[in-house]
Amino acid sequence: MTLSTEEAKRLNAALLSAYQYDSLQRMLFFELGKHLHMIAAPGTFQAVVFSVITTAEMEGWTDDLVHAAHDANPGNPLLKRFTEQYVRFQGAKPSLERLIEKTNSFLDVAAWRKRLERLERQVCSIEIGGKHMGTGFLIAHNLVVTNYHVVASLLGETPARKPEQVRVRFDFKISEDGNLLNDGVRYELDNVNWLVDASPFSQAEDQGDFDTLPSADELDYAVLRVAARPLNNVLVTPGNEPVMGTQAGTRGWIELPAAADPYTPGSPLFIIQHPDGKPLKMALATNSIIGLNANNTRLRHKTNTEPGSSGSPCFNSSWDLVGLHHAGDPRWRAEWNAAIPLAALRTRWQRHGVLAAMQGNGAAPPPPDPGDAATFSPDDEADSMLQG
Image 1 (cartoon, rainbow, N blue to C red):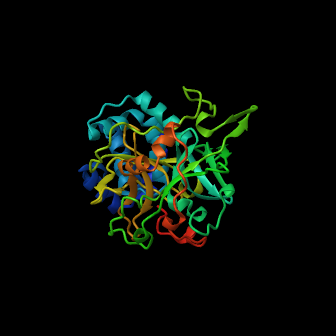
Image 2: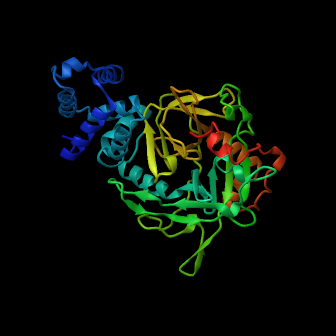
Image 3: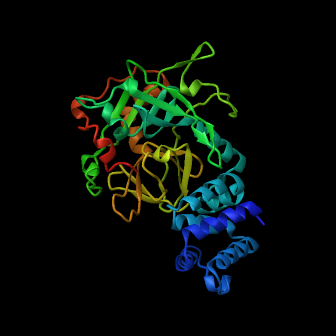
């Protein structure tokens, strides 16, 4: 058996929470091509779910069951939590084998898990005035990227907030049983050149119109310069801060991959995020990518996110950075989330000096012209459509 007794108990509870008989029957048929009446005899729903789990264990399709159940109902909290833990810990080998089959790639399990451990330390929560506003991540030792709409209250002709109100928080984690493991470490922004570059969101998208194509300069990002802080009588930046449990000894940052991702429809997409201001979590979908829009400025996908996840990094199954999550489907029956493709970001970053700043061989570009910034009021922080 691939599941321990405790894991089987938690999967059983998750399936009972996420499904009823009819919906379980549909999920098994449409996602896995299996007939429930051939798996479980008539009886209570608890007995049916138990039969599904034990049959999956005996026949070797537990991994497929977990992923299919999650993909068909990604919003159920018990199922989501179980899937995250299963993929990261207990289910590493079968999960990765499934990903390998879907992407025709070869992944080393130990290296994959070590890479995830490092990435977790490079993703942060963006807080303004003590309130969680979104997620961000390091792209250089002192540069954090997030969504424009996350920090829009700092921008524009009449900003409502001040840069000194911002805190960038790393290492905020809880244990599996909900206890606080690490309250995290907070950094302030540079007090002079805090804004390296920014590209506003699409006004059409902010009004709920996701059919109008955004321009190549409406990429909804902000690159922020983080100030160093004292540590043991030495000034350190986030990327150069010594941390425990990493091979290199420092936090590091997320490197841009050399090759562009093909964004193959149906391929996996992982998102490391601080959903709704909560400690760091990972969301995944093995059949996630829907495709690019007509001018390659947006990538639609099906990986589950929540408010507060805006600004999260998106990865392929090899943990290569492929995009910046920024919005969700505004309809009641949401069918997709949206990210800014890395290729579009890289093109603009080249023009605006961000790549040079990342490499440390150029001065910080001047802040964007306030006249180009989207108008934003404090009340818009809660009302913006771009909260995915």
